[in-house]
Length: 251
Length: 317
Image (cartoon, rainbow over all chains, first blue to last red; front, side, top):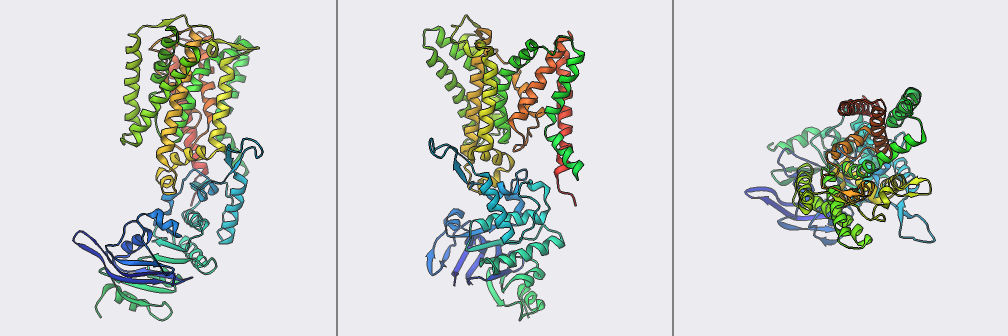
């Protein structure tokens, strides 16, 4: 088990967003979190990402109990989130490389032998690494030197994913990753997500409204309703009708 | 596709293309334009504005306005001259001047990042306040007759070259390299392009913005030193209205007011174009009142070109 939540509860004032939720994420597993509006999907993902702490309950990462007080601490444990609108975390007029390395630019000393403290950006190295990452995960892009504005929505999402991959995450949290995309791009991104899970060995949690796409990529579906886990199934064994029934409740 | 790439290259360097056409045209049609003396004149005329434009461009690239540049210039000129007139050493006076500029920049940065004011409002406050302080210190009077060594940067020559021109070239070189080769420079661009994204990726936005304003303050103060040297005097009314010229030059050079787009050499092109235009109008003895109108047309033209360029690069379905 890579990640385990034990009896986690979270309230916002009167509203009980999560009630005694236990949740497990295994190594190399893609899990889909589904549920209606207000079921607690986003709250659960935000707790994992360190946006806010749970009121009650424990989180174990690789058997060790962890507490995330802020997103940075979650990052330090290898947990990264990619949001619904991935574009919002990209700099539109900068090239792909600059975006993949944003905030973590690689530098080299200008004159190696003397005055080593003057450092300049190692543009070549960054470009090479960016190309490597993109080709490794099968993202096709004409040039890492072109600005984000010149690429389509799906390609932009792919760049945002590539940026998360560069940080070698253990767990990737995807919040409605395809909500803003067209049909064709949606499938490109889904294929990319599947590939990240299987070939890169990253465990992924996807939050989604869209059952079609959940059935397409995940290994296991966890259904939330009114802040509680009401069911679990694997997409190969359950039908969509069964899952919908669990989401809305009743028999 | 090839044609599109070519068009993009032309538009990317539009200032230089327009400037070349303008120079070649006037070399034939304006008497006494294409002489060493006159070209040197244009460069000298560009130097003070050019130095201010570096600071302004840094702020614009990070997505902020700096209206206070011209007031900072006047304050620094007055402070330095007053100190040097009262028997303070040249270096101490110059240091004090630069520090006064840096202080104004620090106040701007703090008002924006720590108090949370909009950059326009914050620098409007210092724009008015600093000009007032400069006027107050000398009670509106001009200081005359500065020591020659103090005037060296503004009026001296090294061999055949006026120091102002060398400073202009040197400063543009240094700051351009700072912007495109260092992490700090990259962060300035990124903060201007998408501040939220920069913050999420762990860039210290406060530090970047405050540094940019402090640098802008230093550069404006330095321009004040050059101006005092050139005119051998310091007036609290130095640089009145210069902030609009500085912004015009930056915009004509293709620096986006939304931040993150543009480069310093292009802004320098904007400065040179503006100076050349006023120079030509002077040579033709056109009334100086019309210069503003022509400048407005230039800005309109630059903005239209810019939107054309954006349309070329943007992804199309």
